[in-house]
Image 1 (cartoon, one colour):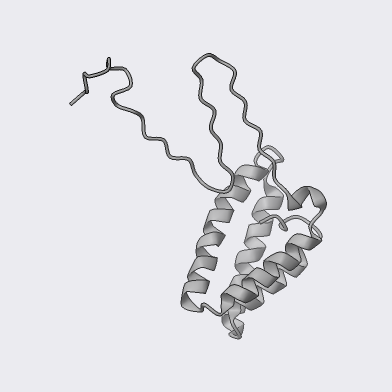
Image 2 (tube, one colour):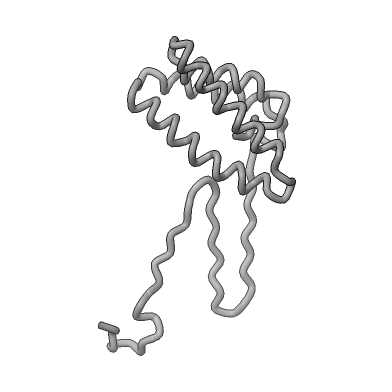
Length: 135
């Protein structure tokens, strides 16, 4: 995802198309169409929407790559090599991600996540005095 809309995109596109095609030209053509649609969607998003679009597409492509490795475990090493090659060619700003979370209010809690989800389960007993649990 980091390579979409960058100079590295053409290498990423051809590398992932070969990987996903696994020697089958029809599957490779499908992968190329999907990758082109991904790049177009990222390119057409407004700057304010880029990150949300990338995160949504990232989830879809993670699933595709997980399926690929489950079907063909030998693809994992090729995938890692391709990832490492592409990552090394990205601009420095796209090789790292930083998240800063600040909380300053009394009793406040700050949470954050990168490349995943946060799932909070509220403490149903939090507003009850000690020893009086809610049913």
